[in-house]
Image 1 (cartoon, rainbow, N blue to C red):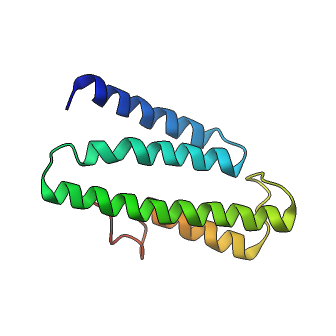
Image 2: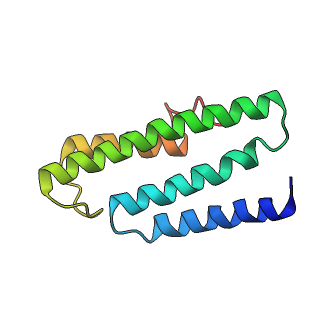
Length: 116
């Protein structure tokens, strides 16, 4: 892999983590998580081995499903509370979906089947 491309992907990982950690709204937290997802996939599949490609595809599919759940959770919360703020997570369905989405993104049990 080109050293400049690797540096770009590593800088994107740091940028996505910073955006996610410093966000006050669900949409900006989601954007940071998506930047991380899009930056890590080329780093996983850089060896061009079939298992690396399989791991990258599994990672992408699970992260896309978790991102969808995260956005759906924030939409339900905004619908019931009228705010997109992270600190205003009061609806139980929204809390359950958010917990599931974060567990999928982190690879926690029982969502650890995809973890490379």
